Image (tube, rainbow, N blue to C red; front, side, top):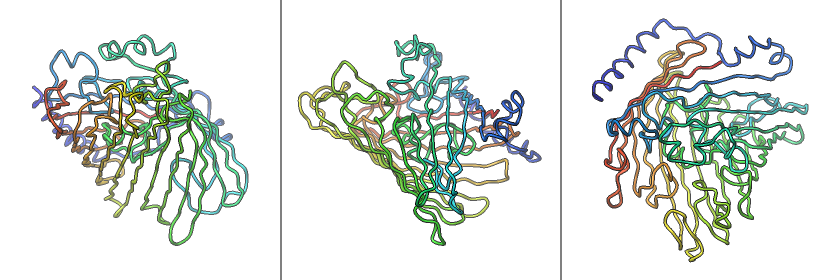
Length: 452
């Protein structure tokens, strides 16, 4: 049965390519519904855009049983579309007023003259769907009444494929034209560390519906402030730097006495056809007592600080108008002092540390403006079974090969089919696919992105 599905999907890839032969992508559809309802003045006169994104897909793999497919998360540890069958991954509502600045916070420095006037902005994103479960922040939207009963019963949320509500971005921003010019944001926001960043907006560097294991290792949200500036803009390129202080991973309500430091160095060629980013987040991530355990984000309980660090070196290069390539090397470590009162809620007392690293790369061929083909490979090592929890609790090396395409069918709709093969190299006897029965998995997935 699955082979027939896979063959049908493969044929569908070719059909999509043929159908798009005469397609022309019109003006982008983002914000069209708000402009129709409210008129163009809000965007044109005040620079405020209200837009939406619907992210829905259908997935199947060759390892799960019929009964497992009826429940949720039967694609795990695959992330992005973890359910089989039809899944509403998310529907997003955005409200943004971008800064007029020479740097886009969390994204890139910009070429050109420095703006000489103060600029104010803001950003808000609210989403509803299956993926909102993993986009919530402790002390903010983690325990909203709208997220019950699934919030109180993890097994029920899995069994009933319950949907959640989250607001992972809610921040104010300001640009100050002093010195080289500074952009500052304060509030709740996605840290945008790593090569892939949520959500699947058109500008995001996410060519596939499914995510890398490296993506799972990154923080989803932070709360605090971040300052960005451009240090260099000449014939050698552009260089930007960012530095901020935040409460911790997915955390508004601090559960220990320490903060985390978030930062980045971002280099671009003058033509913006090559970039290299180094990003990091470092800080204590333990729970101070068992009364406020922010699991699974923070698995440790300890009276002493237990430092956690995450580093990502990622880059992208356009060889010409058709071929481009991006990639990432990620490394992380959770320190542990090994004391009896340093408790991992999964493995018990005496936690003495864990580390992980990974590498992934993606090659893209832009056949036409509306049609691109991509292939991605990844190797991710989590031999302490720490950073991928609860997506996986297996010790070993995760590998994946993904191929697919993106077809911008209209200015409102993009289609992304993909085939993905995962295999796992265990340290001992662990098996991660098919509910712990297998070490390989073949997954077929078709995603539709609707911009409005």
